[in-house]
Amino acid sequence: MCSYIVEKAALVGSAKGRKGWMKIDTANVYFDHPYHSTLDHVLAIDFTNEAEGGRDRVAVELSADSARALIDRILAALASGEAAHAMPGLPAPAVPVAAE
Amino acid sequence: MSFYQGLQAETVPFRGHNGDQGEAYYARPARSGKFPGVVVIHHIPGWCEWTTEVVRKLAHHGYAAISPHLYFREGNPDEAPDDLGARIRAAGGVADAQIMGDVAGAMAYLRAQPNATGKIGVIGFCSGGRHTYLAACTVPGIDAAVDCWGGNVVVDDPKLLNAKRPVAPIDLTEKMTCPLLGIFGNDDANPTADQVNRTEAVLKKLGKNYEFHRYDGAGHAFFNTLRDAYRPEQAIDGWRKVFDFFNRNLAASASSIAAE
Image (cartoon, rainbow over all chains, first blue to last red; front, side, top):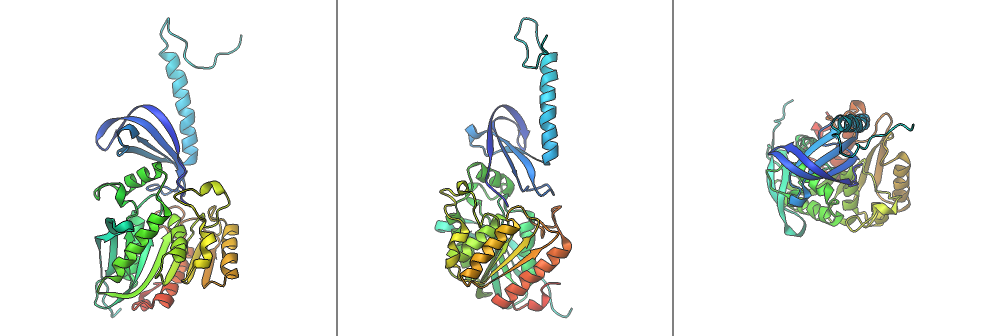
């Protein structure tokens, strides 16, 4: 059964959609029946700019397993990327540090 | 086959809740004659391609069918229905009262057509099934209603009730005035088999005219040919039940075409 349950995440970033690049400030995240996917349920994310009315969106519909895998890969990319891009004299990136 | 087959299908303007003008998808047999009407209520993701296929299927079987675009107020007619649906979702959804008004408006559109017999059925899928149950209890003039796996007819969590959805449909059952057909998959998580049983118990206790059909090996949305959930054997039998029900209660002139 469809629901209107939505988790909202505030974002700073950009996304490329139907009209090209746009600033985004919100991700509306929900697990529900899809519009396009053939799956029974999907983890859907709509990236929007609600400050500008939220009329345009960049949308994805993901299987539950692939959404979880994506979360893991996002965290991995952040960890390795922030470590690789750390600059001398700047605060250390927020990655776990092994206890001595 | 010796009879002529053909249909016309198009987007038409209609007046919904509060007299607001929106769009609806309307299909009817192309041959001359008078036809019963059916309102098709789409699911929350929006006015999708499968919904339009259902409208055309009903027309093929001898009905004048209409599906109001329940999100027309959210944007322009040329905007994709799924984008409008996403905005509606982000804003917390549409109020039940507004959807009932749009259903009543679609019924008025059907009855105003020169090809109308005046008999009107309503069918809805998923959230549209819930809306169908609500309409059967609150919208006057419905002659037959088909709830296909509508969830949240029974509301176990009071937090699911709010200003837009203030009443559990099951609590309005006493007001139901038309025959109800229910189609459900036993593997569905919403409604569960237990919730379907509880709905049936209330209908039975109140002496309502209803029939429920439950299918093993099927879950939610098992009529939907565009989904992995599609179960052809169960769906063929389910559609046969739908057309048998509509033909009995709406007296379709083309009943002989049904179910094949």
